[in-house]
Image (cartoon, rainbow, N blue to C red; front, side, top):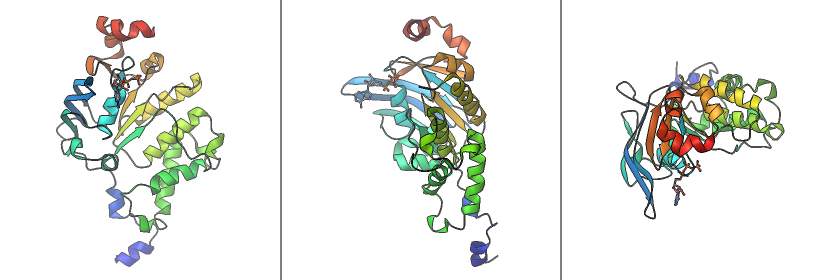
Length: 274
Ligand SMILES: Nc1ncnc2c1ncn2[C@@H]1O[C@H](COP(=O)(O)OP(=O)(O)OP(=O)(O)O)[C@@H](O)[C@H]1O
């Protein structure tokens, strides 16, 4: 098929589209690897010899008291904060400390901040469409031709986030929980390999929390998901492996039962949470 025929054939799947998935190499190790990472702010050690390994497809919960370094750790992974020392690798190929924020996002690391930031004046569908259109990896001049591909992906994501019936409604009418799911959907449009999710259930109803638990657990496996959360009931409902941060280091790691019975964890965190 000539290039011109490819352009005019709406069913044709362009080779570069199938390669949008990031080329992260996890054949011989984890998807994310932080080793001996240190960060100081004006002499205060926010991250202190932090070591963390996330496996491909894993759902990991990160807990810890205020100021433990959870947000700073996410900032380091996404390139917002540069550590003073240490290594941060995405798969075995990508040294994240040599890359800037947009390039790290393009590799397939998506971050969901605590507050939803959807476009209120656009419909649910349009929000998802926009998320795809801003993907720098997709050749922008072919946008019109790729509409069919977009629509399939949007339908797939709408189903994943449970907003099919609201696809043509303006985002401003969505509940807080639905806005959070839409924003997760916007990240999913770009087929991330690793999703970093910051306090996803803050301000949610019980029912929304249950739905969010289902959504995040359904995403694991296809992508790796790292969830920072203070709500222990929610963490318990989704947790497989839990990492407890304290004073910028890993204090404990294991199943929810293991960490919640750890005397040190009870002393510095769970005691005050209970
Ligand atoms: N840009 C900065 N300048 C100075 N200090 C900072 C900066 N960012 C973070 N810190 C400090 O580093 C420490 C770790 O902060 P961080 O926000 O990472 O903790 P956290 O575990 O996310 O807390 P929380 O659960 O309250 O969100 C805190 O003492 C914080 O005040």
